[in-house]
Image (cartoon, one colour):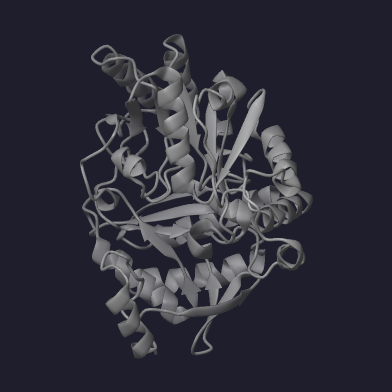
Length: 429
């Protein structure tokens, strides 16, 4: 049972809008590998990884050792001084990004990374108009909320930016859902082209290759490549928000943008979450001419601290050396097929989608296309009772289950989680 004293203290000192999962909220005290334990000693298989932050494993020895050793030397000195771990991690990310002549700026979160990308793009282009995708989520800062196309995560309509929303982020809903993939892309491109004929030149398009908070929805491969052709003709930049899709999570590619890479890499790429394996790291990669366009001083007090950079270096080395991208492809492929087989027998499941270890299960009222957030909450509770932690999200309503385990998930653990999910899904019939 929840520590009622701690829950009461939480409610008395933290904001009402700081949501807690579960009717009986959970206090996680420690973890190891793909498992975590609560304050009562209950063990759970973690299929959400702290909202995709614990990307490699809980208590990964290589990361904890690097953090401990660095903390014993110096934790922080700010970006006003040379910082060897920051330079080393920036070099590695610049090479991996696929962006030519890349520069890297470190922040503390994905929100701050996207905020920085918007600052760079609007300054470079001398325009405060941003193109964004419907159903998108880009963070909780004033500028990031202003471009978020998801009502559940957008508490204000005030914004320093003019945002225009484009079709295409959700393949199976909306006016183009019935089209083939090729027709869908063509219709979205036509919509974008038409939109650009009615507005002043935008600074950039920002898009998640797979929409995270929106319920792990995505367009057909190649949509953003087709968009980029239209944008590049007009000098409009492309910002790929890789906060949730980066570092091999999708299995097929290291970055989500690579599924849309026919027209080249994005102009800017934002990252966060998984690279720190729980430590607070975010950042922006951009071509030098874009990154260097600011004409005033700027720093990030806690972006690039020695201790977080040590964690990032150790974590990146581990995931590359152990081919966790390949593991996400193999184990994720088995898991999604297992879940599709289950879903075929549960009338309330509209769709199982995703790739790699980024899988969404959309729930609806049986026999309809109407979102069923109550069913999503019920499955979340049933999974927890069965020893499995998952997430939820979605666009018009929170009716999609989000499954994103650490990328070191084993086949046996995938089967364990799928069995609990199957039981939970059948319980709502």
